[in-house]
Image (cartoon, rainbow, N blue to C red; front, side, top):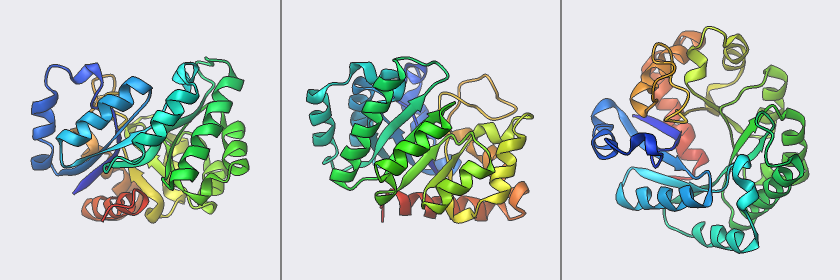
Length: 255
């Protein structure tokens, strides 16, 4: 079964058909989903989804673009939520210099604080890094994030950066971008990396694969990413699904 390691099914894009869509995932070959918090509000709705659906797990955290809302009281609440039975990671956390707000020092401060939270509670991290390769790497090393491990979500850098993360024991999240015509750099990364460090993800409702690029994404489109990985690695699609599911269960520490 396919394991979608990064989804946002609490997003308003799924407001009209969320229940119907989620009910059909198993029949479509998707067995497990981790829904990812991106703000305090979405962490709450993520936890609600995980409580409602047996096959959905939760990551709790605040996306770099929303870190201006954070304070110590909310960090204490996030730490409490890490103890929920279905919380499997701290995320998504990190740096986003593409939009470049809030200011970089604010993003970096709360990235560090959320890594420290993950280390305290012993959960892996789900890292968002966009146009911020050096600062992300520096903070991960300085805060010893490798001690808890995790995934570099929607990996967007080249082989050299991938090698550093892989050497530290991190996983790389691969999604619909792999199917884009201009994804030469990402295809090189997938060709280079070992299969036991590759995770499948949608980032839905964003990043739908070709030929659905620009549409609302969902886990139903993950077979297209499986096919792309299969072609690059020269292994059967069934093997891609099985290996990446085992990887996800190992990283998220699920039986």
